[in-house]
Length: 212
Image (cartoon, rainbow, N blue to C red; front, side, top):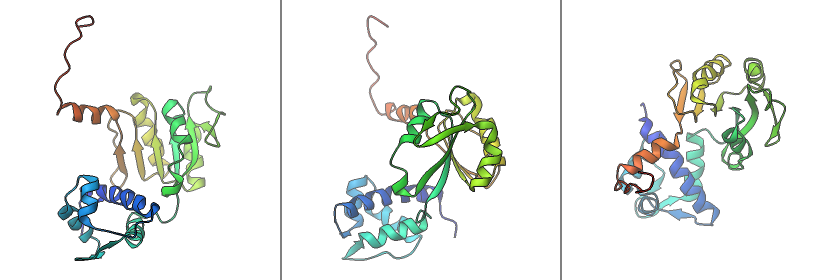
């Protein structure tokens, strides 16, 4: 049975919430409690989880640790996934130094850039390598996931090189859609898109009489 991508997209949200409950020592929860915390209906949570099996009992709820373990298994994050970052500008450096990947199943292994001024710098314990070496380094390390933090004009070419090097999943921070072969997963993170989605629901700001 094919699982709708929108359902898969909610599983990490459930895992994050459950992992927080586990960290504070809570052992049991319910779809109602999770729904209130996440702004998702309890019925939707139960329906999403039912795609993968029966994880709780009516009237008793879910065992937090068990459900955490099951979601980590479903999402295949029981072991670390190695990741490459392409782009060592402000965003790439921030990603390289971010401490929130390792404890959630992801490990930065390599950083690349095409700017000679950045190549050789160290960020997050990793030396920035020449982007021209992507095709050699990634297969050697067995890396199948990459984050793209380059300007929009360079994103497609970078994606092409990553796919050619065996990458099967790309998290794209560049504000542009990229084309990849069938079977390669792409997710987009563009803060402006999310801001524009929110402004739809807000009153338009009053023009500043000084700046217009």
